[in-house]
Length: 224
Image (cartoon, rainbow, N blue to C red; front, side, top):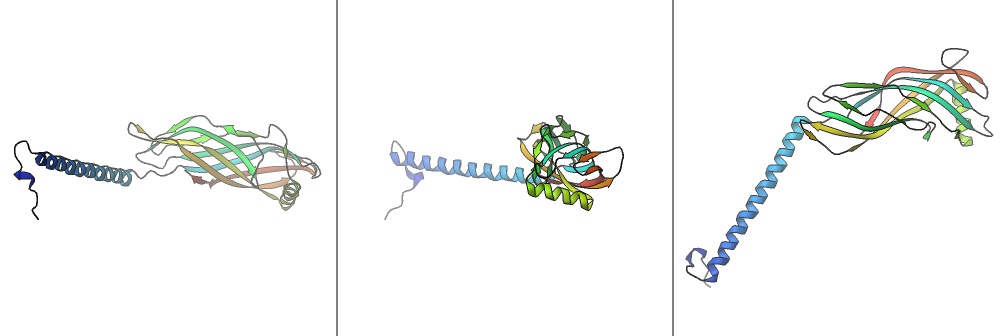
C-alpha cells in the first residue's frame, strides 16, 4: 500500500492542500500547548514567590457595658459591648482590601448583637488596623430555655464564653493587579470573667449586678 508524501504533490492537486492544512493544525496545537504550559508555569512562579497569607486577627479587648437578661420564663436578652479587634497583613508583597466587614457577638452559636459595619480599609505590606466597634442588640434577643439556663449557670460559675465574629469580603493587591472578592470569616472566642460588685463595666441581670471584662491579645480563627 503506497504512503502519500505531502512533499511530493505539486501543481493543482488537492492532496498537497490537505497536507498543508494538517501541518498548520499541528503547529497550532503545538503553539496552544506551549502557551498553556507557559501560563501554568508563570502562575506557579507567582504563587511560589508571593505566597499570599490570610490576614491575622486578634481580639484585644471586649467590655460588656450592659447585659440585661429577664428571668428564664421569658428569656429576653439586652446587651451592649465594645470589642477591640486588630487585623494584620503578614504579606511582604501583597496588599489587602477590606471592602466590607461586619462584627457581631454570639453566645453558643446564637447571635446576641446585630452586625456592626467596619470602615472600608486597605492594608499595605505588613500593615495593621485596629477597630473598636460597639455591638448592640437593638431589639431584645429571645433565648431558648436551654440557653437561658446555660447562661445563668455560666454566670454562677464566674465565666461566660462569647464569640466575636467578623464576616465580610477581601481582595488581594499585587502591584497594579487586584483580585476578585474572597469571603472572610473570623471567629474570636472570649472567655469573660464575671465579677460581683461595682466597677466601671456593669451588667444587670435578673439576679443582681455583675461586671464583665475580657482583656488579652487572643488570636482568632481566620478563614478566607
